[in-house]
Image 1 (tube, rainbow, N blue to C red):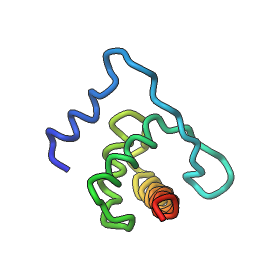
Image 2: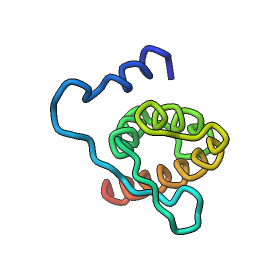
Image 3: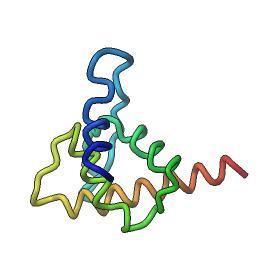
Image 4: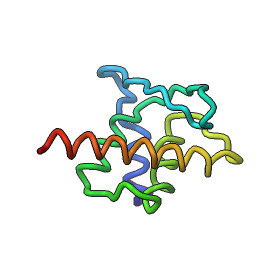
Length: 99
């Protein structure tokens, strides 16, 4: 993702409009969920752009999520793996709906 696109994502919904949905995700795989702002919007955008639902999108997912949510630097790989998993689930549901 270009820096310009990332900046646009950071600023989206900043000046009014409907508040973004918070999605609960089990980042650490231990049952504790963390609320992430804008995850559905991120997934929709990546899906429309045709981004693969595999590890190749992991870095982009972390950057986009971190633009509006706290992501501890030391946990970026853990967040990345969880986000790829969630995005793959999102894409599978989309594919099933399109059939």
